[in-house]
Image (cartoon, rainbow, N blue to C red; front, side):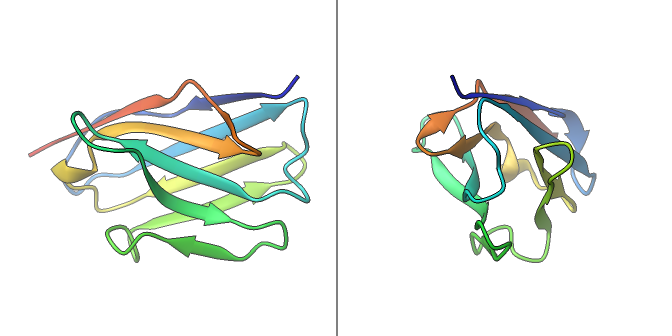
Amino acid sequence: QVQLVESGGGLVQAGGSLRLSCAASGIIFRGNSVGWHRQAPGKQRELVAAITSVGSTNYADSVKGRFTISRDMAKNTVYLQMNSLKPEDTAVYYCMVRNTWGQGTQVTVSS
């Protein structure tokens, strides 16, 4: 059974940074594409960043240059480093692999 557990969310002031983690069990990230998504209140869930099985990355235009997705194969964990955070980044952040979602972690950015 695949399980994903996100952590690292919290409350931060605008301009601050957070690093989210997505730890997996029941599946190995190597060989799979992994995505970080977010959903703000009243809005649809959107893809923020993704890393492919070969390590290529892509980002939503709204976070390019500020967010970085990476993975640690030894820890079977994917990270999302978020810098220069803005109030509009406030959302619940989820990781997803093979259509399996974690429970999400709340990120709140105050102005």
